[in-house]
Image (cartoon, rainbow, N blue to C red; front, side, top):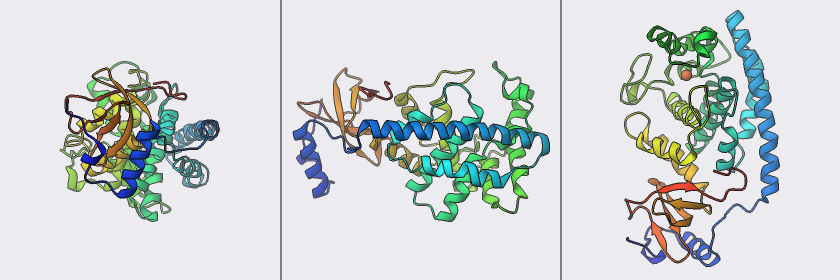
Length: 328
Ligand SMILES: [Fe+2]
């Protein structure tokens, strides 16, 4: 097995090398020194707000189903502040754990996709204008489902072909509901229309290829799939964190925008720096550093050696360990 030493890492700045050496001396690299209790309180507070916002979204879906009108002001004034506040939380790993849906799915999913997409937009340094469109569009990405019959929407078993066709129409229904609202931009409606399109043309409703898909819809596609995979639903159990991100890594080329996906994976993995992980070899170690271009192939400190997963392609992180909040 090839192992590396700090001196073998060539692309680090002096400060990074100093931090790295420091962390090796101290045996860990937990960079966030906020007391655990403060993090927990913050997460608990935002979790309650997300629950409230999810209930409001349920009412909004109900209004849309009955009237065909989207109450934009209510969304802007009451839902968006919660999304903005959640997207300010720096503890990404814990926040994402908190966002997992445990019971009710559809409405909470909507709020959580709003939060995750907003975070990705910030990581991509979008302009304020784009970020606003993204936050609203992500929160309303599935609003067209208000127009899909409830028995199809909540059916626990497999959908028939015709039911699936109807389900897929939620994209077009969403676009129609949003396109003529003067207070929101056309791009918000495009997010509803295009969030199931895929880079290789394998998505729906129009099998668009990469260059025809709006960047904001590409971001929402990633947030949507991430949250769906990490949540329990009527027909599937939540996948553990490491499975979700390795699955998404496998999809970097083909389904999703590779640049956006890399930024997303890097930020998530970077939030794990300092955490204990189990490697596929059975060894345990602490994540020391994450490469933006290969975020899953981190540098691991096992205590007596450093393992660079970029150089040990047969090894992988198989679990995140010892987490007092998440217990994964
Ligand atoms: Fe959707």
